[in-house]
Image 1 (cartoon, rainbow, N blue to C red):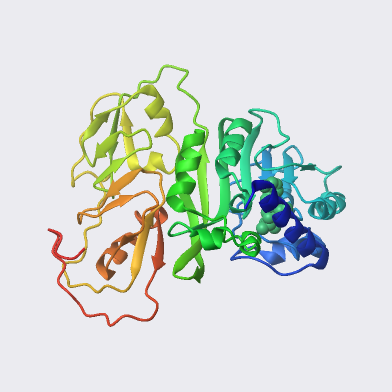
Image 2 (cartoon, helix red, strand yellow):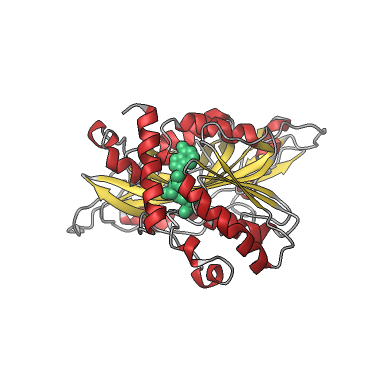
Length: 395
Ligand SMILES: C[S@@+](CC[C@H](N)C(=O)[O-])C[C@H]1O[C@@H](n2cnc3c(N)ncnc32)[C@H](O)[C@@H]1O
């Protein structure tokens, strides 16, 4: 479908939804009691997100926040509360009906929050050509919008342009576990349903890294729909516009603590657990951002870690047979590649089939934040226990 036609159909779809208050879309987990205390029902009932990007402890007081595809304004208003009266929020949307509802309620929300005037501004615009000045935004949020944009790479480049150096994004969106086939991609109705335009997790993160973001990692994921064997799931990702090192830093080495046995960062540098790796000043800046910072010991001189050191971490699989139950693990950052202690190599975004024993490892504290887990089994599996040798016998 031509780009203009996709955009027009998506906008018509959301204009109609806003006008009728139709229920649409995906899994969210808002604290509705809290939101109802200051956001009018007219806004809450046209919440069409697939996550809670403003409600995940991502917004800080005094910040300038941009919400791409702000719809009725739910996340802008939550961000307004969180940034406080000294912060600022800009919501961008292409659909007039959405903007009208959001605008109408901005003053009501400000009064409910006890602000002298609204700190939220709504602007009409497209995600791939945003009416926002370069390098001015601390935090970009977006909730179930980028999948609807015909040219996602352009949107990611726009995000990078408007972010301040050191700025970040927290984006919730729908992705798929495999490339969406042409017969779905050209189904006009399914564009509006957040299905046709969904990228794979690999392509989504690759678009963001190509735009210049680094430290891209998973905040949250949840399964959503399976259509013709394609798993669509909601993800919330964070990443940074990492500034270059400006001041001299004493940091010269990074030692991987674990639990991964080996990782490759987004600049292609490989780190083996316990072994100091020489790094550049720019690497030292990147590795100081969460969650990378928690995985490394950064030092001026080489530091080796072994199992006797409290900073060394590992999770070994149980020495028991395991069962294949249809689970797949998708490593969702911040590493291009990461290996566990059982010879699995997890390439960012690529589904890897895992057995019950590996699932138990990935559900432990050190691993769990890095993985989206899907189950592709159409029905409960027989669950015959098989012997899994670490030399690649089965998993
Ligand atoms: C699924 S709704 C989500 C709205 C809001 N983020 C929420 O959580 O309720 C998608 C919104 O994005 C807007 N939108 C979709 N594609 C857009 C684009 N390319 N540029 C600007 N806005 C867009 C639509 O008008 C609609 O309001």
